[in-house]
Length: 263
Image 1 (cartoon, rainbow, N blue to C red):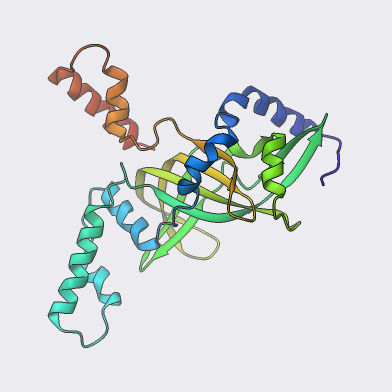
Image 2 (cartoon, one colour; image 1 turned 180 degrees about the vertical axis):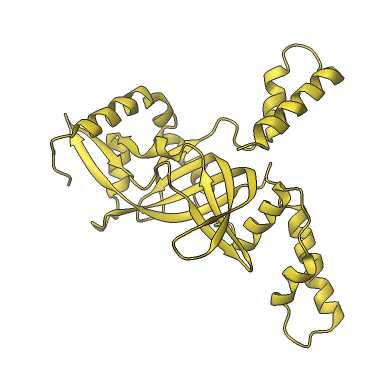
């Protein structure tokens, strides 16, 4: 088990913020986890799908012949090539970032800090500089989930800790599932330490789950808009007790463009 330690000033400040956000962080009870395990276990999005979401967000059709070429064995007939192009075009059509979320399955280091019999899991990698790199053929992407730093420290309840310790092996990492609704894609390239240039893909956190060693969620955040499209989300802000008029719909569409096509 974790030992009680003296908290630093930085940690105390973090804990103060976490207490203020406790409604958000504890908003989903353990009793709801059974319903959400399907989300937590959603297969990770492939690099190919992420690339197509990027192109879709930019409203730019990729060169499907170039994308298909590496997937087709040398000497293939035209029917095989066309089938691969058709597959990519169909996948592209289904890669609307408004409804097709990017799912990340990964692990993150953690430490546990305990004071006054309250335990906080510190996930220091979830900070303002956090990103997930992806490469598909010649396209390199760095995916930045907005406001991930909010989850840099997560208070644990007794039930959460009990679920976490079920099967725990003592290693200082936690598995997580992250669903991101992409909303901005940039042509600008960022040179990283690996010598590659990456395009930026920014999105909102739709769902985040921390998993124990058995793959069971012990802490979950799900955005209240999960499953809604961006347009329906904004239209809901305007829809009171009457039908929207055409000018109001245009106004909503203008706000969608301003809010989701700018970083």
